[in-house]
Amino acid sequence: MSDETLAFFRKQALSISDADQDAFIGGLETASRALDELKASGWSHVPACGMRDILQDADALEAWDDFVGTWDHLSEDLFMADGGRYRQRSYAVIRRDRQGHELLPPQPHYQSKVYNRANGGVDRWFEPISMAALNNPAFRASLEFGATLFDRMIGFGQMAGSGDEAFIVEAHQFRILAESGVHGQPTPEGMHRDGVDFVLVMLINRRNVSEGETRLARPDGQMLGSFTLCEPMETVVLDDHRVLHGVTPIHTEDPALSGARDVLVLTYRRDIGGKAL
Image (cartoon, rainbow, N blue to C red):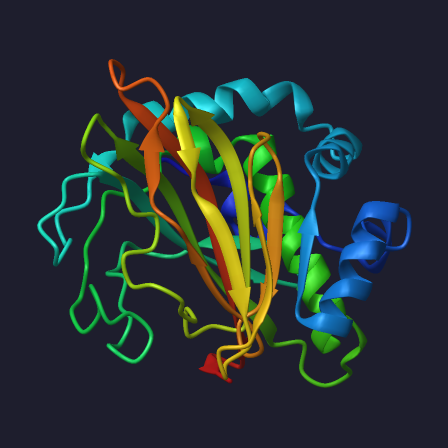
């Protein structure tokens, strides 16, 4: 990968000042409401119109269609313990600190069986997210929206100290497929935590599918809410320590045609001085 291609993700490429972050949080009604709800209940359902405003403010809305198009080039997930061939995905790991973003070298995705009973316990290598997707302004704005929101949750922005505070962000592009008589499972592991600090899930597209209801619960199993992400850009943000999440299977609406549910998942793990918290 050339330096030019990776320019955005090098630390020198984007300076994240307090003013930049205030623009995301203090000046946006959508983000302010999401922050209040996240603090109060551990989750927030952000409507598509709200995320559209955020992308618009970040001058990223015009790049949305190109971003959506990158989901047409995902590879099959070969680590499905149920033998299913209904999931396509790609993966990248990014370090986000006060100076900017850095794309980390390719690495496997690992979750213990504690967090992923279906597919955990092994190193899973996935095709990397394309540079077309990573450099797309819609991806950048989505990543920074989550980082700034969660920064406010834990106070990285207010920390004195060494300035080594960062998020390790794992980015996942998912396409779940459905065909007549074959449903797709967005979360075959059921209700779960991801084993991180925060999670952002954004709907990219739905095509000829029904159901796929997002369900949220406390760690003790008490249900907190349920809803279906239906509109592109519709988003949910979660405190992974306080909220379990899962999605019901999807089915085709017209059995003569295939269907798909595309989402972007960004998970955020706190890191100080190279040590996970």
